[in-house]
Amino acid sequence: MEECKKLWNILLSEISNRISTVNYDMWFSSLEPLTVSYNKLIIVAKLKSVKNVINKEFRNIVCDEIKKLNSYIDDFIIITPDEISVYENQIKEEVKLPDPVENTALFDNNFTFDKFVVGQSNQIVYVAAKAVANQPGTLHNPLFIYGGVGLGKTHIMHAIGNEILKTNKKSKILYCTTEQFVNDFIDSIRNNKDNEQNKRFREKYRNVDILILDDIQFLAGKTGTQEALFHTFNDLYQRKKQIILSSDRHPKELTFLEERLQSRFASGLTVDISAPDLETRIAILQKKAFYKNVNLPIEVVYFIAEKFDSNIRELEGALQKVIFYCQLLGKEPDNIDIIKEALKDDIDVTTHILSLDTIVEATCSYYNIKKEEVIGKKKLKPIVTARQIAIYLINDMLGVPLATIGSYFGGRDHTTIIYARDKIEELIKTDNLTANQIKDIKNMIQKR
Image (tube, rainbow, N blue to C red; front, side, top):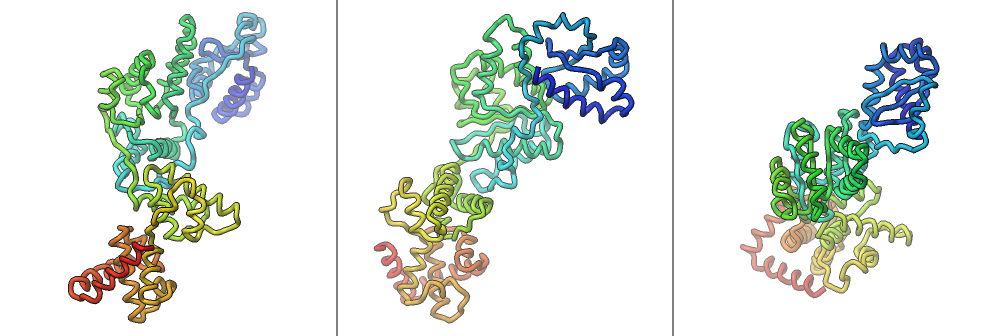
């Protein structure tokens, strides 16, 4: 059988690293895999003497390497050609082996801690996830993560898996959706007489170091699956294996679950991810654009971040749409008009758009100063005054992070931005001319 041969080739490679070349050539090179029967790998030796030596001298090594490669197989039997007829039925029927759970391909390499943008909405879950990745099974077990759609739950769970595998590639980590868990359980009970199927289900979900189940809310109405998960949970927890769960709501709100499951889900650390604030959305867009090698002006970043505030998935979708649109037309995503055109089906472009550009352009128009002078380095008094007023207005009307404002004004640091803002605030209190000028500029902005 094809899968059996693939497993055997990998197994031989691992065994060759643990024994001498002479021993390998003498005892292993002539062996052939036959089939898998009742969780045991059946191997054929042409000579009885080879069979005896393997069983006596190398059994522990072979068993050890088999268990590392596939949790479903727990032993092997070595036979001679005259014994093959005993396994004729198994040879005819293709046996599907479960995939090894210690497979780094299970986790998306784009979902790492380095690429996870931390803000007020997700800081706690980030810290908790890092702690679990550093000491799985020791801290915060189970870790229960909840939040709405597209807020980063799957990203943080993949990041945990990726982080653990960086330090221990042999960790047995199983990540799957709750839907997959349900389907596997249904397969295991489809034929009540098939004890082999039931055993494979238990082995798949219990013979792991870390179990990660996504979207646990899909257990609603599935009593039998809840029972299976309850026993799986208990088995892993008692053996100090890490359990990580995600849902769209707090464990207490999963009222469709058995009370004993709710209690166990809430017994560790429960953390939530909420919708990202404006500052976090700006940081996410900037990081995503960086990885896509796209240069987005700060006013474009702010515009997209302001318009898509419900979840990260929509935010990323908007960015991807802008990039595709600009590539299609051979344009740069460097002004609001292009962005509006790219996203016209997703936002109301007829409404008044308040942006950094809008405020700066109104200020420049009022003082009859060029925009590039205001955001540039010139220090003539009229230009400096207009620049400080524009900074004050952006902070007052948009609430944009200081770092974002500094980036817009030629990369100025936050202390310069704070000084400009505070200076204009004081002038408004003491100088009627400045106060009236700012009122005029605000009126101009609102009429645009």
